[in-house]
Amino acid sequence: MKYIVSSLIILFTAINSFADSPLTSTPFYNAYMDVAEVKSANESGFSKNHMKFLSDETVSMDKKLAVINALSWGDSAHVYAFQDYLLAKYKGLDKEVFNDLRYTTYESLPPVDAAPHMNLDELVSWAYLDIMADYFHPARGWNAVIIALQQDEENAAYGLVLDLIRCQHTMDSFVWCDVYLEHETFKLRGDTKDAINEDAMAIIDEYIGLYKQDCSETDLKQWRAQNGIAEVETFEVSGTITVNDAPVWIEDSTTVKTKDGYFKNQELSGKEKVDLEIVEIYMPDWISNDEFRGSEITVKIKNKGNVASVECVGLLEENKLDAMEQGTGWDMYKAAVTVIKPLEPGEEYELKFRIDEHWVYDPNCEIEITIDYLNQIKEKNEKNNKERFEEYG
Image 1 (cartoon, one colour):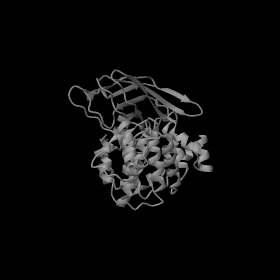
Image 2: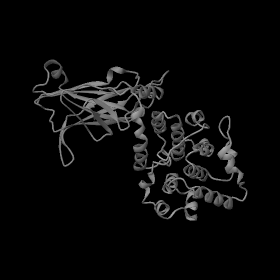
Image 3: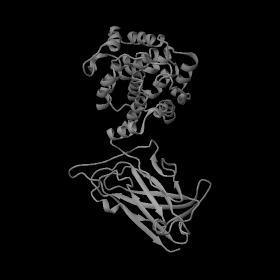
Image 4: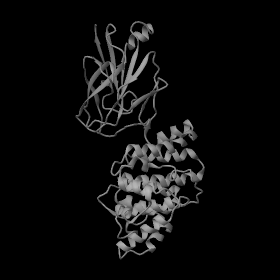
């Protein structure tokens, strides 16, 4: 509800939008061209079959948004045709409802009975059609989307329309960084119901991500702090950092990041505590196939706490002590990182670290494993997050 209520802060102000904007420059329908209704909407325009599609409660909402997105923008005929369709379908529906939804300014959230008869998908579809027709006034869709979200707050498709409305409105301030941060805030919600597919979100991210260049490091740091996100830490290495197939990469050979670059902090009070523990480091394996050639180290960990953990980082370092004492030499320093998924209380999990084109017995194996490397999680016991494995070759 916090995300919904916060929309009041940026809505209902004058706006000067542009054709190059979050609503008009995000053709995510391209990721749904395998859906017949999306393809026909893009090629032949809006028909009664498409209106029935938008009203069909057995169809997932992401596909309905793709149909509307495929119609492009700037044509009010689409929304008025859909209004006529709904008025014919629901005999008790008053046409003034649509004007009320567009123009009524409530001091707080709109009442959920402000749009009777229509199902929630129809309501949000109408709103998206309306703001795509008149992208200069995205606030006109706000009431309808908020009514839907109050009744189905975890619907990712409804949330996406609100996200686009907020981003479009934020452009009026000409503080371009805020457009990027609005979208990133929406993505942090992590809702999955009716969520658009990854390729579709990538299309939206590609455009809105352009606004990140207008964010200063201070802007990003303040946003991370406001959203409980850990500062991404760096560590210097002499040697090669490699990554397994987890959604992690290294920037400039020093920075650990998740796919989106964010790790959440976790600080619990009272008796609720996470306690991640390294249970066992297994003997390393040599892997050689078409996909990977190098060392693979498996580590069993467990959450001994009484509450689930958040996603965090695991770090493997080889020959760390030799590198610190002697510098780079025969025993070259190597490092690898991986993401540790959230663990429920009592759950065990096996991490896999990989070091490309390197055998850890060089000639001896000296490995140190650290879990929750960024210290995101305030744990019951902070002393069981690090273990060593040593064996002569």
